[in-house]
Amino acid sequence: MSGLAIEVRDLTRTFDGFTAVDHISFEVKAGEVFGFLGANGAGKTTAIRMLIGLLQPSGGTARVAGYDVVRDTEQVKRNIGYMSQRFSLYEDLTPRENIRLYGGIYGLTREQIRERTAQMLERLGISSIADTQVRSLPLGWRQKLAFSVALVHQPRIVFLDEPTSGVDPITRRQFWELIYDAASHGTTVLVTTHYMDEAEYCDRISIMVAGRIAAMGPPAALKEAFTVESIDELFVRLARPEPTLNGPHRSRRARRIRSRRRRQRAKSRRALLLAPTAALQRRRRRCIT
Amino acid sequence: MSPSQGPAKAGPHDSRAEGSPPHQAVEVESISKHFGATVALDQVSFAVEKGELFGFIGPDGGGKTTLFRILVSLLVPDAGRATVLGLEVVKNYRALRQRVGYMAGRFSLYPDLSVEENLTFFASVFGTTVQREYEQIKPIYVQLEPFKDRRAAALSGGMKQKLALCCALVHRPDILFLDEPTTGVDAVSRREFWDLLGVLKAGGLTTVVSTPYMDEATRCDRIALIHRGRLLGVDTPGGITAAFGRPLAGIRVKDRYKALLALRTYEHARSVYPFGDVIHYTDQRADVPADRMMADVKTFLAAKGFADATVARLDPTVEDSFIARTEHAA
Image (tube, rainbow over the protein chains, first blue to last red):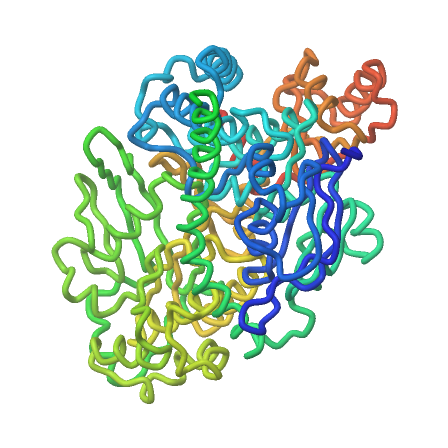
């Protein structure tokens, strides 16, 4: 791999003649924290789903961790972690059990799982509640645990989809320190967020508007280039260029994406979990035969 | 904000105004509520004046939704007393429900009905019609009108919230309770939503709104910071930040994370938090002048190898204040 964690060239996806992602190209360097921004319906989720191997592109190429997302889907899944705000942990399991479950799904050995569990509990400072049901933990702890679980198989790249929604400001900052820490150990982070200040934590950001990348670069450079005070201001300017509110075009677009998105979300949760398991079973079969 | 300027009322609704005290739209005294072992609200007291845009600012699990549900009479508090528009929320719930508009945190419309059908339905429940109340909902409805035949389920996040707001307004309530109307909505739609609340406020409507986004606090006349069932302060946004009480330094440096970790080891450091591309720093020394503090921080960072660090005085934000108050409470 060329020091690039993600390489995207002219990536495109159409649904029934409607272009959700329209020839986007970008690169993310290994160890970079990359903010993937855009208004609801701009095409972020479609793009991410292609990058994690859950959706076939209509055109263009994408390599993640050096693997082609179409040809080497299994390898892509093996080398990435994923955390979303909605689906992260099993609430009726304890932190220790969640770690063991995910470790098993990703094919870690018992020894590895034991080691990783001890490390993670210590790093998060949650050894005391390691055997408490996740349901009864504060949201902030759950989010931090979910992040660690997404890293249990030491992926090269982790995708975080609105990881800090609704958590208190201190926890939100502690969460970002976990992100920095992971990045300083070489993990590449691609993160989406509705908190515009979080955009400024990123090494680089991109802002998607109507399926295309409208701006990309380090936050400071973008602010200078667009002569704005904050990324929030830039976001508003790009995402809603004219003062008239949602035009019919925009919302037809949003409507289509949304109805599709609901179906796909459920599917992606299953696929993410099942894919490594299937690979695991194949490997087991190979061992047996 | 002018408290004397009550909500604009149409003729037929004037008869409903009995029982209203002169100034307060909401009065809450020592409300508590628990669910099992969880204390959702712990002796919460505050008042909202008529015509105010009042915000509850705090993260999930703070008690915002429980409080709103009590104020619109959907939950009964364990202890304490609350009146809305002069009506006691437990005893006078029937009268109260005619006069409050409530937008629940989760999307509460009928997804299979069109925009127009939803509105018509909510109007008919309250014995009125969309035509009769058009003036009230007009500022928002004009944005929805191009999509009036679309099913609610097929609207974008921002548009759903606008429709929900319309439905909460269609019976011309004297007070609005909006529970997290902007959660999960993108930054642009959030901004537009707050602009609409500004329009309603200009019409004299009292609005109580909650949000986890601290940057939205400045759109309110007054705010209450709420965390783990308790109020950490009630004041104007300016009053909340003015009470921060110590100089705040903002540090810009190339290697932010390493500098952050280094600063945590500094003997005088009180709090060190990343805020976007700036590190926010406060000092333990209570009486140190700001200039001296900033010079010391710069010297410390330079000695640690961060020669490029720049240190500047910052005005604290509502979020800084929230953090400081939760640290204090913990």
